[in-house]
Length: 112
Length: 116
Image 1 (cartoon, rainbow over the protein chains, first blue to last red):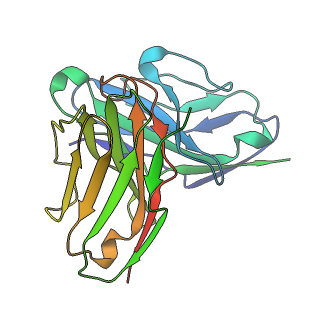
Image 2 (image 1 turned 30 degrees about the vertical axis):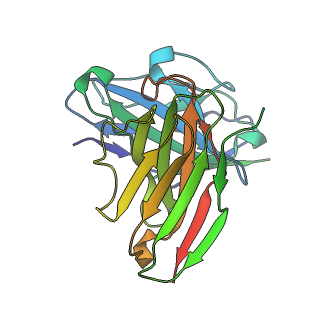
């Protein structure tokens, strides 16, 4: 079974400082990984997925299979980045599993 | 166009009663997903529909939970004999393509369920 760990429940950074939201996973196969974000009083939304190697709102995440990590990074935090962030994993689609496992989430607070 | 809608927005029920939650996906979206968000368990993925078919129901928390989708559109999540631990926000999402999680999902506002 797969597991996703986000070690920080709350992360506070100053505006303009770098941000790194940690995500570690446990899965024996090849996973697909995602970051979801939920801003206050807004709907949950997908932020980015590792397979598309995209950068959204200045955030990037690199899959490190050696360290089984998928940390979310942004060089300069903005106040509007304050939100709840969830890391999630699904087994590679060819594995025949249709599951998505979430971490417990990290609340990012950007201090003006 | 309209986004994903869910009804009711709030539901209060008594322990032991059945409840039915509805999701209207974005028109033309073939994939539909149900999630649950609670204080105790965080975010949980429940089930995925490709068209009217759900290939894997193992994410449903217990056999009191069932889901169906008809006409490739509306989906209902039914909880029988509700328990207090079922209290949560139930989220629905849809995406254009059926490739699991590969396409951007559009989330609904959720149904907040409270079981007394």
